[in-house]
Amino acid sequence: MAKTGMANSEKRLTLNATQATYRILDANLDRAREGLRVLEDWCRLGLEDRPAAAQCKAWRQSLGAWHKPQWRAARQTETDPGTTLSHPHEEVRGDVNALLQANCARVAEALRVIEEYAKLENPALAQEAKQMRYQVYQLEGRLLGRPRLAQLLAARLYLVTSPHPRLFEVVEAALQGGLTLVQYRDKAAADGVRLETAGRLAELCHRFGALFMVNDRVDIALAVGADGVHLGQHDLPVPVARQLLGPGALVGLSTTSPAELENATSAQPDYIGVGPVYATPTKAGKAPVGETYLPYAARHASLPWFAIGGVALDNLTPVLAAGAQRVAVVRALMEAPDPRQMTQDFLSHLTLPSQQP
Image: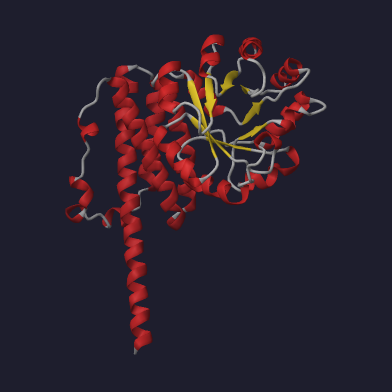
């Protein structure tokens, strides 16, 4: 008799979990479509941008097609505590940009929830939500006048430089191979040397249409017209760097643990580094976290991220299998006999779906 009772209890628990999943999917499909309609109307009537409006409409219709009747039937508006929850920031929008940014975030957050819970019910929907979320990031960059962000989201390979006697030659070869994102990193050089080197690298990268970032130093990034700065956990806070650099610049942040990832989400950099994946002299003394942190980031990161730390062509497959879609490398390119060919080899393996940045 006791076994029968336990079985019935487990059955009820399963049914309750299923109904809750249906309600979550129902609510977030509606939320994503509502946010997309706000964006669509601005693209259509505010910007008169027919392609962008058509894209928003296509996304709305695609999500509507996934919306199953049983998910709608699970809706219980009268008992949903969320219908009475609000926040002062939701009640006022300072300008159109604030409105657009809020709705882009609303859509992206809803798509993230759909991506996770759809894995329980419909993996194909989970994959589509994931791809759509990254497309929304790109649209946000366009709507808010941040072309650098759109270019960053399209990047798959990120070169972080290290001191090298033929630094400019190596970087130029990688750019010739298709590299679109470079960070200048040199912790030991004097400020004057760093300023001169950063200026030459900025000019070189921009000649190839690539983004140029400076490690740590907001002042040097400003001085040479860099596209942004990459910060460590003990550097300037992200909001301060963004205030100094201006709204169009990019800000990246290194993370080494789930706790740092959660803090980064609150700080809202444009992207994060996730690592070190493997032991690397670049991060001497830091234990590799690839086996645990990489899969965690793949499941939980709501920001674009690059796997970094000892990543090379011969260990790229397990990095991608763990969920990474973008990688940052140092020695793999800086010490390559042929940086141009190595760049092309990396890019041939980093095949993001065409819909994703």
